[in-house]
Image (tube, rainbow, N blue to C red; front, side, top):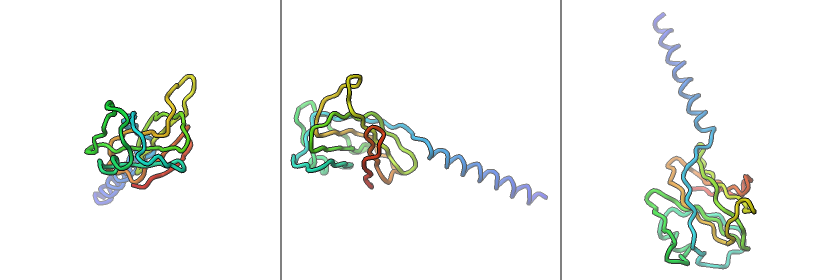
Length: 150
């Protein structure tokens, strides 16, 4: 009888723990997102829309350059940079980032009269490094646009 009770208790605890971890991955957990301004791409010949994730100084310096002394430089110890480059100028802004399971999701939105923003070809933002992340998904106006594997 004791053996059956112990087995039943262990099975219930295991079931509870598994159900908790499954539900934890089913909702988006918001993470910080800080847009970076005053940068341009080092090679202006962007022929299409390009989505990138930059994880170190060397790659960042090879990809973009500051256009102003006020350009805030990311700290790659605890951050990474998500980037969108467009061939034609666009009016977009970063609105949210979060993680769910092994995915980091980055959301941009089109600007309008209620949400004005500047027009450009380079859109950069820092997000914290998420240790369990395997990919970054980019969304524009809540529509999936690209996935970048880490």
